[in-house]
Image (cartoon, rainbow, N blue to C red; front, side, top):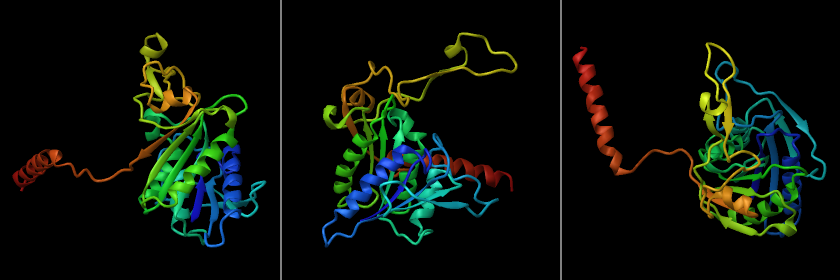
Length: 283
């Protein structure tokens, strides 16, 4: 299996380094009949919260890059790009670095990606982008805190990677790991995506002050923050609650796709008819 590694914290981030070292060892330990290779193509700076954005590639149809070396993973080529994570995944997947991956592994993100934050996460945006090109993906995040245990998240990610190798194409998994030593991890559970959002309130509701004509809009951050805050309103099997309880949470995701539910056929048909009548009336 050929693995494309990326992240949204930047090519020099400690989470990516921990993941690259774990994948490097995994490749080196491959049986003789199992070809394993890895390549890092990651942003050269922090692009957190960029989702699947690629930027304005039309006005600037080139991307700058620079070679890097990750300590402990010298058998893994690494490049930093002037590009957000989704574009890094696309360029790596399309063979821009003479490498044709089977899987995109994104992370280890410095902070959990649970609840509605999965929509905004650059870590997850990278695997969504890879899926559009037929690749499976694994997004790996660890709860933020002091002395982040990236190695714990990396060890769990390798176990997931072994299963992803035989999964159907475009399989997407989101792994969130609590910030604990491996010996204190309670296990791994299937997590449902909670309703928690990154921003819980904005404006007067968050800051308690009336808004003027100009100023700073106050925000109140929700429990889907890097640390994972109050999860008292979550069910025990939801992603944030699992992380707080000391479990790693694994969630299968589905990227953007055409809506094929027949329940929407009527809505689409009526909209098409209304547009058609409007256009004919203007002739």
